[in-house]
Image (cartoon, rainbow, N blue to C red; front, side):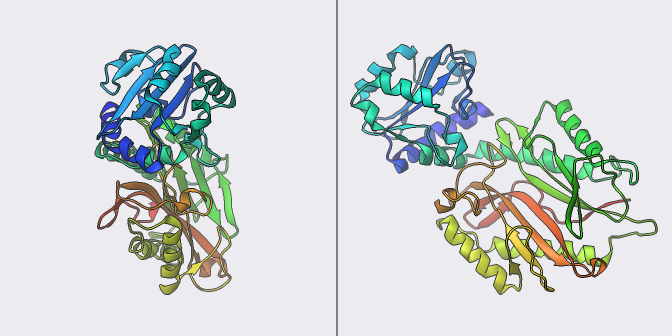
Length: 405
């Protein structure tokens, strides 16, 4: 599956990404035992000393692909590369193609586009010499577009990972795992880790966040705190599968003795949170900058009667307040590409485009009579895809408050 993804992206996404960035050669320099963030994306391969993946736009509808130094069965048999050679040939290789702008992986804000170390940059400058050393530019926009524009096989693979994340989160928030008055938050988190281990999968955010929210905010997260009746319990986590990382949440209420359903106030808070989704779905369109989309989202929320607030700073009134953080997902739980958040400022300047994978994440704060009017924070997070006719989800989106007896 990863091979198919790579072939499709090299063929269909890479030319677009390089030309949109105005880069006619992209060099990804790698060093033994120093993993480049894009190593999986580019085909892996074994490196002794130093190596280079080199992509050259020589016109036409195809980018020339060379692996100078990286070797090995999976790389060489994949069909992804046209040329294999020694790392020592890099200077002659570059001179023979005479690129005007050479993209390298340096970035102030985008982690996966910042794989070039200071010493490797110095090495490139010495090795390429003039005039090519002065033609090195940041490839952050190229990397962002190459990684975040999705092909069909990526959506299939990511959907599989997200489906596993949802299934395990909902099982964790059930009596299969939790016995109120006995089970701790860390018991739940370790159960989830064990499920991943049994499947050969990884955890995207290390220890799953299993937490309790009370009138004054989060009470405890993945600790020895015992789950008690009457508590509101949440899970925030991600699954790693085939070079992808998800980010999802689920919410549950622990019934008190004699209860057969959550109290009306808590159920209403959850229902209010779910209703926010339809307001925001209608606003997000392809072809609009992310920061302009956020202004439209704020306006739509206010028009629908919601308050728009900063994170964990709800207003002291009877409205439901909302804060959102629609960050990209894909190869990591917090990925690159257009971002509808305040904490990824560079990515907020990018334009939303079709088949963009992102986390449909927001928090709704609704006053509870049971808490003297203090607001219960309900987190909603599912993984979504921007399509021509609107938002679609790559797994069943949250629609119910889970109940633990």
